Image (cartoon, rainbow, N blue to C red):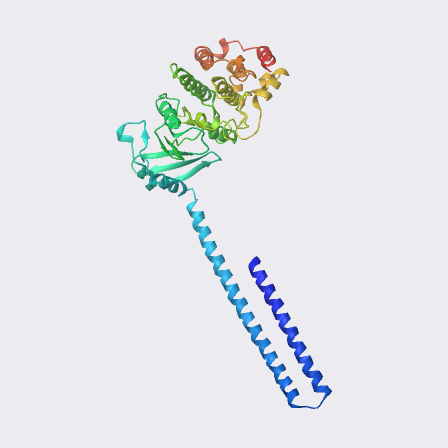
Length: 420
């Protein structure tokens, strides 16, 4: 029961009991007078007074009862109004409308509402187009929300709404200007961004094929194949994209990725990898929980650097080789693989698809173990990683299994011992 209503009923009960006790005392006095002496004018007066008191008690109780009924009615009406307001608030915070509300707030600001584009003129649109479009919430965490927005004439877009940023508006705009100029077939291009006060939006073309994480999850569940050739193609594409990032800033400060993982590797229509969320980590507050989350992709030194991205790529390479998924599982995959190698169970780490071409899996396993070396100075650069992987691919294309000699697992053992 509502606390206010409970208090009201208690007060009414005390009042009724008090009046009842008073009336009983008066009536008792009248009765004693009646038995003590014969009727007189005074007694008759007392008797009338007792009757009057009883009538007053009845009136008071009736009024109290009516008051209680009115109070209950008021409480019910108030609750009904609050319930309606809550339903409206829930509707307003639903995935379909939350981005539209936030963008409306941006639109109402006096600052410029223009989106900054990195595409051709014919592919551009206005902020109002986003306001008028349907939006579906795809993912949400403490630091960002991701929506799929369907524009009438321009197709589907992924709109990322950012929170908990350290960078000022000027720093954010400068970083996004650099990111927008990155052009590589294995990096998801930034279509546009918006920077209006606390509201910061990143806009990309939506990828219907999903992520490498969803591909591997379907494979593990037995819902699709994931052959060796496709895994190699994806590994090479990611390596090429990361290598391009570190070759694009020769005359300026490098912007590391900082969050390489399966869910941030999207797939285009041809299932070619696209590195997403590039530049996002560099504008986060270093003290934010969103940066360097406790997951299996983060290097031990927990820093934004090329060595950190090399470590994360090494973990992805291990996932492709073992068929095990680190994302959201808490698995320390590098530790597990190194333990298997030390125990001379190297061949057991490979997924069944890799076991079919195991001779080519061994050199890739060596590369991945070098990438996940505990100390950053012992890891190769992305350029060296790409060169090594391309060497394995060339060997795969030029040699058949009958003409090749399997790698010796003892080489892997020495790498694991050295970097452990």
